[in-house]
Image (cartoon, rainbow, N blue to C red):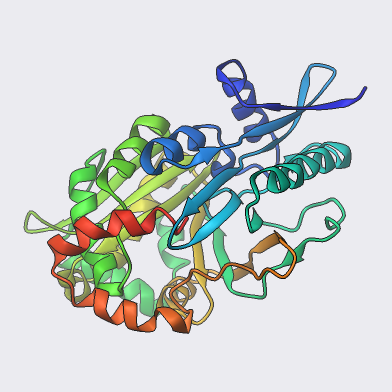
Length: 347
């Protein structure tokens, strides 16, 4: 039977998510809810499409147009997500989704289309597409239901930091407190020289994904020192947006936080801890490696307009060095007011 490519609508939402959850290569970043999240929080236009054969869904592509004055115009699968790209049951469905994305690229006139594969696709490399040079990796590791075994699997020096947090009497709570999360996260990213997301984004994420998301916050003597927004997908936990205050360093707040995420996730049946994306040579890369996680290269693939180059909107780009240094010195209220207007183009 011929393959048809259709746009996601209300009637296909549930079928889309069932397909994603059934596919071995499916990820939380492929779920249909992201379309509404990104459109509501940032105003970008989603072009979520799926392949269909004989009435059955055979592939999905969560594609979004990200257009801003500062950072250009591109199609991304999936922006604000570390994974994405076409997810298909067979080569023909994969090809149909890619062909549709290329046609949309010509129609909209965007400068680039980006597919964020977690692993190399099982199907042939798309003609005319190029891979990003090594930059991003992800860290994933199996965990068990046994807390003691999970603790012992953490390398000795890092394990000592977790125990320091325990000995200092740090406490954790899990819920939907995005207000506290945003306050802690905003301070953390400002100190790194990075614009913060609007609080509304976190609220929309929680409202959209419901029981598949939570916020774990760490307190010392009642004061929040670290907080992280986590996603749950099948038997995986993905600590996604997290940070700590200056005090977190002195009391091992971040170390204790990720242990608490792991402990709580194990209790709810998770058997895979996805520490997420980091850039090579960064402090985040070293932190995750110190937990005993091995890095796996992420496979990001691009189709560019003639004469174009791969977008490079990451903090390691030398042209952003002065901006980052200046941002670190901004008063927090100013950074929180201006940041959301900038970050909408950094998906």
